[in-house]
Length: 219
Image (cartoon, rainbow, N blue to C red; front, side):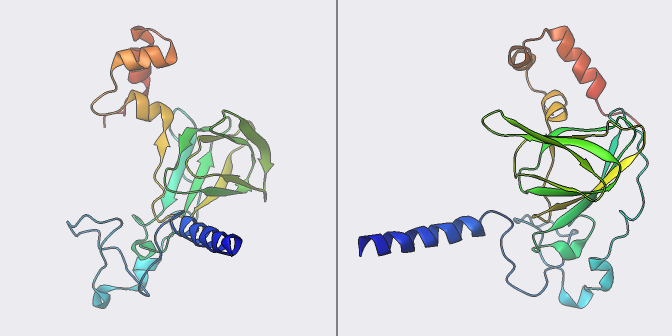
């Protein structure tokens, strides 16, 4: 009897854990994001049904390669709820990442989603680091897939002499991205220098150099 009861509790706990492992389930057919609303909720409030159109569910922004023009040599083009209002409450999104030769998508995390990539073109060295500080890495080629578990630091590097690209899928309408270098060295207000110097075992000159290199370019 006790074993049966324990099994039921474990089943309930597993169901609850699965439910909260990604965006909450939707409670209606549609909840197209009303991004003009000033209301703050966990997601976006719903647009009036009379104002919904096919444009809310369409996006052509990842059909073609993006123009890579930054120092790291990669460009991420998101196809999330901010671009496709109809994704609101659906718990999925995509992105396209383009890499120049030798381009890098620097170490970063997605706090709200697991990511799976499908290589469209080229060959990439990819990997993630577990909380036990173990690197799981592999070289992936055109047509192959790799998964980055939710919240873990990961990267992709194009070591080839040709451009590469991937399609990324997420189990969140807005997975969020935290680049480790950008987060630590360009935060507003800034992370105190004595925190950075001690964490990285470097001097204030190196900290200032990092901040200068990573600072957003003024237009």
